[in-house]
Amino acid sequence: KFFLKNPDRVFTKAQIFNGVWENDYLHDDNTVMVHIKRLRNKIEDDPNTPKYIVTVWGIGYKLGE
Image (cartoon, rainbow, N blue to C red; front, side):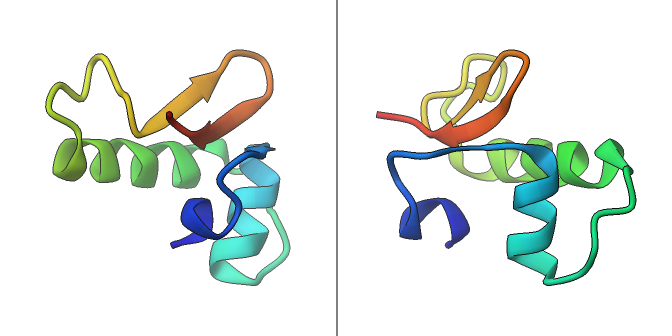
């Protein structure tokens, strides 16, 4: 839902954490990465080559095209 509301933006892990859980980011990248992996496993045809939740290297994630 978070990505769908902001389709053209790239989000850092901290922005995703704050936007989804509405808590302060505690510098725990693993929480966001695990949830992204679980989402990809559910929605992607091939989670190893994602089309819907795309990694923007060095920045974070965005909704795919």
